[in-house]
View 1 (cartoon, rainbow, N blue to C red):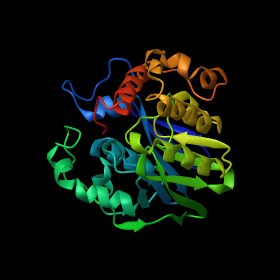
View 2: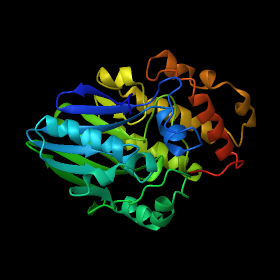
View 3: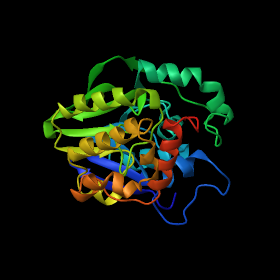
Amino acid sequence: MEHLRTLRPAPGVLAFYDGRVDGYRWAESDNWVDEGALELGIASYAIVDGGEALVYDTSVSVAHAKRIRDELEAMGCRHFTVVLSHWHLDHIAGTEAFADCEVIANERTAKLMSEHRAAIEAGTKSGPPAIDPLILPTRTFSGAETVRVGSTSIELIQADIHSDDATVLWRASDRLLFAGDTMEDTVTYVTEPQKLATHRVELDRLRELDPERILPNHGDPDVIANGGYGPGLIDATQEYIDVMLRLRAEPELERVALEELIADSLGDGSITWFAPYEAVHQENVDIVLGRADPL
C-alpha cells in the first residue's frame, strides 16, 4: 500500500487513490485487485463535515480501508457512514474496517451481495483474493435518498449504468457528482452488454443534474486531484457506448484503434489517454460480440 495517496479534489472531499504505478502489483499471481483495479487506478472518497465522514466505497482490501479510517480519525472524524457504489469486489472489499458503522446500499446491491456472498468469501467470484467476511449493508434504499454529513446534504441516486445496481452521490451545494463506475477514464468497462442502450439513457438522467465537476472511481489521479472531470465525461462515455452498440452491425469497427474511436473526446479534453485501457477495450469488444463472458 505504499502507493496509496490522499488527494483533495474539493472542499471537504478526500480521494484515497491507489494504482496507475508502473510495475506495482498487489500479488504476483493473477488476481482481481491488480487486474480490475490497481492497474487502472482506483479511488474511494470521503465527504467530511465536522466530526462526521461519509465513505464512498471501501477500496480493494481491509488494509486499505483501515488506512482510510485511520487518516479520517486523525482529522477528528468519529462518526462514519459507508455508502457502496455497487457490488463489484474492488468497491466493497474493505468494509470490514467499518463493520461497526452504518453501511448503506441500494436494494439491488444488497441483493447481489447476498446472492454471491458464499463465492465472494470463498474467493471463487472473480477469483482471489477472497473477501471474508463479506460485510453486508445494514440499511438499504430504492430510487433516491438524502443523507446528512454534519451540515452537508448528500443525495444518493440509484442508476442503471455499468452495473444495474449503481449508486451515485450528488452534492448539490457545489454541483459535484461522485460517479462510482458509471463513468471512467479512459473508457467504461462493459459488464452488462445487453443493457448498453439503457446505460446510455441513464447517463442522460445524470446530465440533467447539470454537474459542474465529476469524480469517478477509476480515472486520472492528476485530474481528480485538480477537481475532477467536466460534464464532457458523460458525453465521452456515451460516445464509447455508441461504438459498442454499433459493433454487431458494423464488425469492421473491431479493427479500428481505440484512440481513433474516441478521438473526439480525447481531442476536447473530456478524457485522457491511458494505454492499459486498450486491453479493457478489447475485452469489451469480445464481451459485446459474445466471445467472452462478462464479469
